[in-house]
Length: 298
Image 1 (cartoon, rainbow, N blue to C red):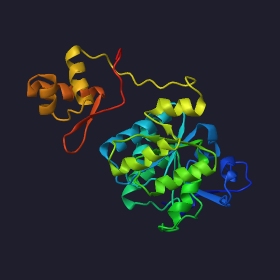
Image 2 (image 1 turned 180 degrees about the horizontal axis):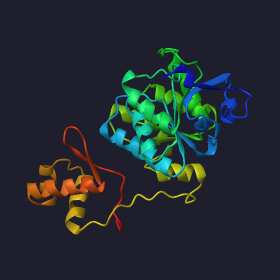
Image 3 (image 1 turned 180 degrees about the vertical axis):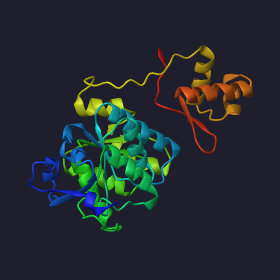
Image 4 (image 1 turned 90 degrees about the horizontal axis):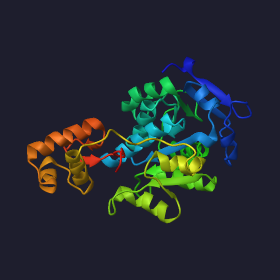
């Protein structure tokens, strides 16, 4: 990334986000690359930060991507940190939903970390911006992440945690949000899994339980003021039976065949159809899981 393409917004300028002024230590300058308007036009009341584990599960990645996509589609700006796992999934979802999305980086806004996310960084710049309190060319260090977390927490009306072990940087972001009197939400996970510990602790302590984008919109804007449709095409009885088997925990064609009392080949075909329709997702190990898409009348 060429430094010539970078821009700066100094504290006190009209374009400087007012939300950052609530920090005890606001960045004196915000450096950015990409679309300057993504930050200058950012509306605090319609901005969400989504962060979580770098070692996310398939469920966590899917939830982060669906949240990012549906919130972006509803006109909400999605902020995250471009890291492995949940952060990257949230950005990808926001891009799929039409953006904008803002990546807050630990090094300079043009220094991609991890380096393997250069492609994602380019996609973020195409519909949003990457920002930092550090000038272009500044290398990322482990000490820069806690500081950048405060910026992510300050920019958003709500910070959402999708999978986070205890302790973790994501929980630091949630703590910063609480200190700034921002809303905090958490996506529940499977009891006993380490990455579910952080969200469950947050929910126990009063964080909003987030099952999907509608919960976020209801918390931020008021119940029912803005709705996100999660309804897919109508399903015939046979497909509904297979879908219910997946919801009960059957995650392979053989398991579905047993649960739904059908032929394994028929189960495999039904799962393939449900995947194409968006009702189920399959991971690299071939295990199927339910998405948040609801069937009409169910």
